[in-house]
Length: 464
Image (cartoon, rainbow, N blue to C red; front, side, top):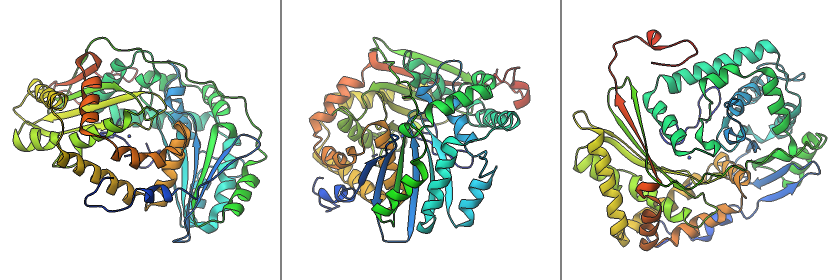
């Protein structure tokens, strides 16, 4: 999710990579070849460095990835990762408030940041002449951030207002939060990335400083640079910028594990809304396990494009839904959820739509997908993956994200393993994971109150 200005939201701006013969004849090795030249290093202070030369244009993407996200927080102090992301732009002794962003923009570059459940990342994109300066600026705020009480209080209010706008005033977002909280009872994926309202309100500057000093250390970070660079010179620049920062104590690991679910859970949210909404969350593995690849193929078959099963049948043929789809973000640090979501047309009910979703699931559990349907999904996976790699920023994102949650070499496995998925694999994972006992259902039940936005707020930020 992007900080401050635009934010990257996976699934409904809430909950998110994606050879068979066919339309796209790129050889299987091509995607891997794009990463064969990755230069991997580790500084004496523990900082991981990934460099990838791509000299088609005199531009670079500089990214710093920290292994800290909302999963590293604790109940009562949720939202610290996201708030820290905001505060990282408040300045240091060398680069005062707003100086960081202005310096990047004056050089013709762009910068931003984003927080997820598993990581927080910062980036600058622009001319390769700025490499040393941007690295020095990122190193400066890794350890030298200066945030006084007034700046902290102001930014905390900004985050609270962001939560009001994106969640409290958005009934679907509110439903997603409630359903995720019900799906996870032991693992910190249960709370929202932005944090619970009261937790944000109660966070102190001391909480932030403790969190910043614990997690913003070189041995908990990866620097990624992709673009027009000399790998040896780039490594020297990284060493010059970050090498003098001392290694910090090893941050505590997340050891919580979500226990097996033994029965369906249901959440009904009554909020002012025009239409109902239906969510179905199923516990599934992340991509450290082989089942991730047929699950991702299942996701594509269900929801990739207007010819996908959910759109074609529920929206186009049966005229039950305004929209319907699936989501599976399997590049996560811990096991995650596979999501089905749909919104009924006016005059249709959530119960009708839920039943229709279950029918589609049972078809996948009983019948093998056709070779033609699977080939189409594989062609979509292949084409979208290779086309996205044309972006230097996206290549850096893949390297940083995967190195943070696991290891960057998983990129090379993606296309080959996706192309190995069979119709039987798809049916098997549909039967194993999309089972009622493994499901949490969330229903948005529209409520008409006639009250204004101001009248709906209670003291403490809660909503009627």
